[in-house]
Amino acid sequence: MYSKILLASDGSETALRAAATAAELARRFDASLTVLHVFAIPLTPVSLAATPGAEVDPLLLERMAGEVQDAVARRTGRVLEEAGVPYATRQEIGHPAETIVRVAQQEGFDLVVLGSRGLSEIRSFLLGSVSDKVSHHAPCPVLIVK
Image 1 (tube, rainbow, N blue to C red):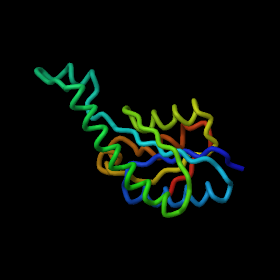
Image 2 (image 1 turned 45 degrees about the horizontal axis):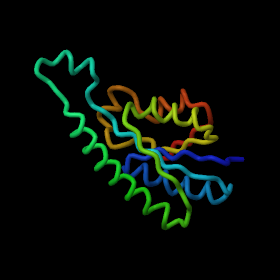
Image 3 (image 1 turned 90 degrees about the vertical axis):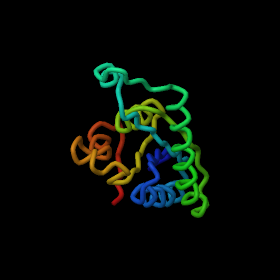
Image 4 (image 1 turned 180 degrees about the vertical axis):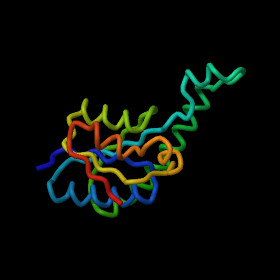
């Protein structure tokens, strides 16, 4: 039924529950599993341009992204390793929902698994959750784990 599963993880508790579910599905369907973490850039070039004197050092941003992504990979990886499921990792920088949908489409995943709420619950309350956006725009089924 599923041969390529994309697990979107931000390392939150719901994302770790989603990882356990994705591991079970990958094992059950003998599917490949890829873990995707998207480092969300809080400031866009437009908002930076509107803020006088605001600058973002690209090297600092890259280092911060790497540190966060490595921490997420370790947390999520522990869950998948305990389940005995092989997996690949992928790290991106950008808007989480848009990036998850783009990767799912470009790489031909047949299922996206993610948690219902991530680390930025207040922001998602105001702007709409990543899981909601992914469920409406993904090219394949989306499993949202609570």
